Picture (cartoon, rainbow, N blue to C red):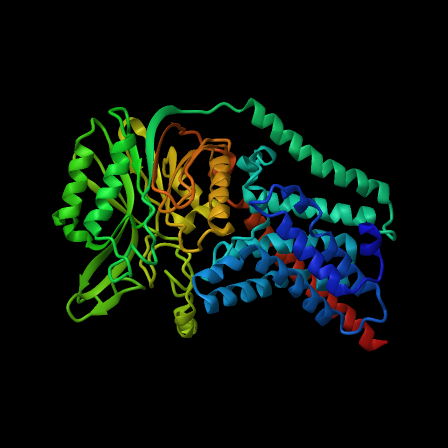
Length: 543
């Protein structure tokens, strides 16, 4: 019945909607991720129908309309929860992201029209990988729906991400979908070949992954760690002037009590969530704050404890108006920057700071400010601190005893594979993810965010300690298994033993090399396609 529907003259609208629904059905946290290996087939039939049907006029515009509908259905069903923070900003994100997703599809449509199928379908893969790579690295970055993220809840199928990263997953999904499409399309020449190719491309990577899965051994020394989940509502309790504001002293006491409940003399690391200390701290005088003194006393009570947690901080520049691109000004402070910060406190009371550097567009970073100042009211809360924040150019590693290095990954940063390898190349042996995750309510948003962290464990073969304000807090081992996890929206603390691994994977060394290769191939394809188009037009005009 499905094959008949795909091959028949069913309305193009039905194909577009079916494709979007299949992508949603295959997305975490549903246990049906393998659907992604066929979820793009309706889109491929959609393009094929438009190209082949002589009755369809204005083919490019028709393909744009239906491919946009396809992407919109997927975005709405999968990321509707972004509207829970702010409806205008959420809708803008959904509609804009759907539009951006159609750009590589239109490039494919044009290339296939000029060169034919044998260039067109490989070009589709190259263009889409280029789009995903671009979407990971520009100011309007929103890579939540990178196709390779879709298998995050099934780590036993993607152990080879340590070689390719999550963009390798995107490549895999497109290869299988194209081969399935060519196999079931009636007019395809050599259909038996594509049948074998589809089955082989789907099954062989799974078998390789399962082999790695079953033979994998955790590497590195044991480290006892505690993750804390204070469960403080960021809308009504967390911040001053909130409806049910909890005094900052009481918030700190809750964190200390939960930490003490699980910490032992052998505990080396305690993780608190993003903006655990929400008062704005002057970085130059941070040691003078009463809450910081209390925190240092807690750490000193244990033999060799290191605490990693989040706070809001600022840095004063005085009269230096050009001190940074994000500098602000207040009459009583002068020029200054505000940061979403991770802090490290050791037994000696020394404090180190890292400034979150993958900032949420429209919330923590105004993208292309000369063009987008008008979008300020549409900001979406996808992380902890709201406003135009400062950042830092390099990744930092917090060093504990015995060569244990912690990557302080703050919230949104954890969905960027290549970005996280920056910590690992600097020596991080453990990844610490500190996040809020309360902004979206009890929706798939926080669950997907948790699952994406498993990809970083596999890509770098690093254990993860994850502290989330309202959940889910957990430990993840080097093959992406969740070892312990808290419930959602409860106060909790967990103690676990994780491994500190210092070896670099292929992906840790080379990052998103697939994306870099794809962008250069895309450039060559576009030049070649445009050149052939011009030559063909020139020949026709002479006839």
